[in-house]
Length: 169
Image (cartoon, rainbow, N blue to C red; front, side, top):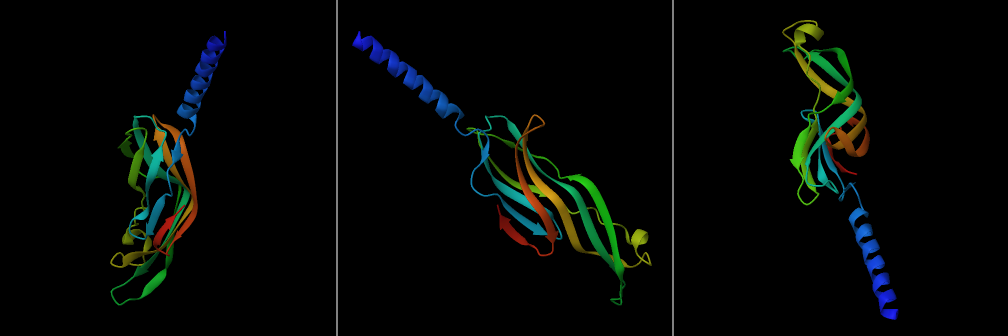
């Protein structure tokens, strides 16, 4: 009788341990996400995520709004007052990564700067040059998706460029 009880108890404990191990972590980021910002490329992030199975996984960045400020300058260096543009609900291009052993290492996931307006549209003279001087991204979020469904999101917050640089979160 003791042998039967001991065997049954070990089977229950082993089964419970197996279940706990299989579902312990779920989808998660591994280590920090690193992002760089610049007036030429916008926001670019890289990092690692796990718990994703072995399916193709998309990564992209969104912002509730993007405001860009431009100045116009002529060949003599004279500058006209700033010209502004605003875009709402901005989504960067989706980069696809194939998960291996449930993990992806993503890089070059980008929310680019808005398309620069034409000097003919915003400057006193169409021969002047348009220069981006500042850009502000409101409520930036990194998304990791499979099949069009967010598995992971990582809020980045508000970002103003300049300053340009690199940060981790």
